[in-house]
Image (tube, rainbow, N blue to C red):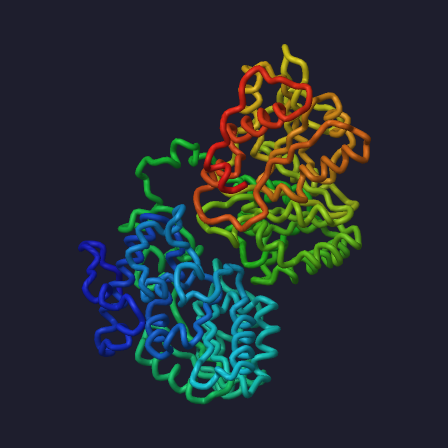
Length: 630
């Protein structure tokens, strides 16, 4: 079955199955045509908006079978992350909303409880579905609502490498009176091919299994095992799922699918099968060459991620003790560059962030310097390991947090906005935030040379910022700007790439006769002793960070000033204490007041409110967009 791109997307059958009830009324022989229309629809829309293409193309028939056998929402369908749930969205009444997929105010790229009663879990951190299902089954049993109401958890083989999934399996398999159907969607990969002993075991089962088909890892845990099942045969899956439901006991249904099914560019993309894509030419699967907003914002510059990957590989060429660890994010964190040169020194542990961190601690104990490359939002899952297994032992482990701060269209669970607040509580840990590509390379080298405790580098999503050279260096602080003709009124302390809007705000302040100093601490936490001393020479100190404004750099600087008896007030500008929606990074930063206009307005307002001062110009009204998020 191949996606046809030579004709408009046919809508007749797909439009008729905009709810699960309508789908269940269709004859089985019409489902292949529906599947074809769904794939055409996904390619057309996701290539236009960006999103998760390959995973959803692989789950078309599986999702059709699930919604024909189980009556959502009476039967609970729990999808492990939303990478594989676009088809579910189509079948539950959201076809027209795909025009605004992942756009501000539009359809979420993941499941969203506010969108539909059919969406139970909107968290997009992997390996959680089985635990949700366990809790739902317990709740239904306790409330007497379990009769003829199934609980089904759909989890990929990649997500099954996560430790939380195995904690849930341990409980589910032993719960004979709380039947949960675990559907393992096995396409052999998450972003990259699934690694480890579990992948090898699933391969044995897929190859026929022999005795293993009757007695395997799942049966040993107490499950009845059905599989392997052809995940692209709706009829075969319907039959197996109906049998699984009738047993009223814990069941694993092992479904084999092909990521990117039916779309040749995805099927032949061995790197990640077009897992998460930007806008594409739907005919070729190549990035869309049409000029657009991205070109105007310098999107042709190398990404922060690629700059890191190349810098780490080069550094590994100089230092034989440098190793790297990732949690199933080899290419997304650009560790594949180092792996290509030093394959024995790069370790992909699967979707197992806790194990990644403590394994890195063991590497450090063994005399190596591990670099753990991970998305900022996913490190939250391993906080205890950072605190107790790394920091308590003062081990030299470097964490590189990709997608730190506001990430954009992936939404609440993917914004990396918690790291500064959370990690600031870890004793002995130092955090750096490079403002540009050159500083990323410098700070990575500094971190790798650190031997007395853990270090963190945080980098955002997107093209790396243009280099901003320092005018001077003072006590480890980079002075980026100093007003030559005005008294020092405002000390601006931007974190990482927010140096650019801070500098624009500083120049605007100078035109209004407000003297400014802009300083990049490079290592932003803990606060360097020189920073409160510098703040003491100004009327106001302002921090600018795309992390929570509670508990981050601003809060730490205010505390440091109090301890140093510095009376200068500190104004922390950052993200609100809330879950942010999906939208572009630029728009979300502007709504939080973290663009140059928002920074300028906040400073003018703060100066106006200082007793005994009279700024030269009146303060403008607070923009509505800023008020919304404050």
